[in-house]
Length: 431
Image 1 (tube, rainbow, N blue to C red):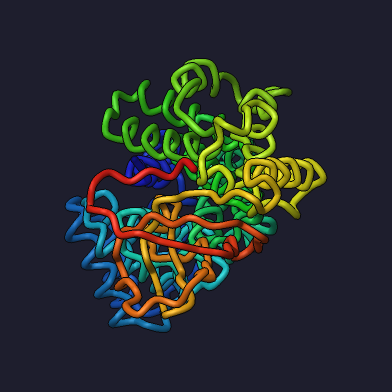
Image 2 (cartoon, one colour):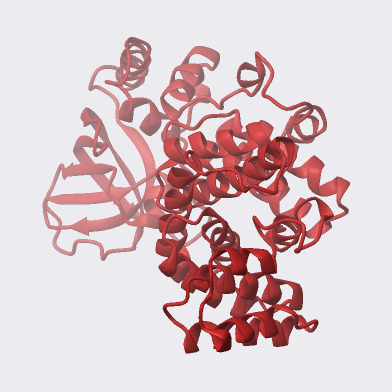
């Protein structure tokens, strides 16, 4: 999904001008070495010999050897930059990282190697090497700080320097965005990704990771779905089917949990992500599934009491105190239960699973979910003591009068209880 190796090639070979033409990322010209006055002929010859090597791998090694031999040289930084560029040209990522770290140690505010390390560390982190997180955070934040005061190299035009500076800013802000995302600092992550996308709105990784930061935030920012849709479009344009599937699967999962189903997801993917910014009204178009408390109100409003199951009762009573609507729904169901019991003159019958029992009481689970989890949702006071209380897990028919309930944790209290053993046949939860 991430193409930072491609970004690195463009980064070091800026505008396809070649290493010798761009001292910002490529080799230092011989004149620069002369301008810094290497007084020792042997040192000067060693530097120029390394500089003139045509083979990039040999040139990188020669520049490293030069720095090791002349650690106090006035062209130490130049030599490390030369070595860094040579190893990039040779495709030796491991040596590129090593030399870039040496260059940062020697020239702590040098934006070039800091940005290169940000590229490399971000790639490694997204490939699953979480040990790179601390270094990524350190280099990306440091680079963004120094970028503001970075001076234009003499042999770059203002236009080329502006382009190069923007490229580095995109890399550094994107690295900071991933750092914050991994640290679950979602608001800060969003801020950094938006800065990166302002420079280059068409980067699929930054769009995907911004969408992730917004959808993982609490509360969720549903604009994240738009950035995921854009990332899908961008990856489709690059024929990256694996990335398309990965992003779409993640987005569908988050959408299903937020919306309550997959209906509308394909339409969202097809219509969102066009342009460079989220259009007004997008968030309102992504409908949130009603909460369980809202579902409780709706169930009582839209159904007759006879159509509500015991499991429905549980949900309604659990949310009694959440809103005036929920209180009204709970009172309505409670009144209907009392009416069915003829206000204590008639008993209700349930099929239940025994969770606990004694001679005088039983704790049972009636709701399917509670039978599975082993939670008690009804405490029964038996009308008569029993000599042999049923064992835990036994399925029984119970009858009695429900006299009260507790919302959270939910359970009914039943008095005048009786029970009879039943077989292990199908169980139902409708009273």
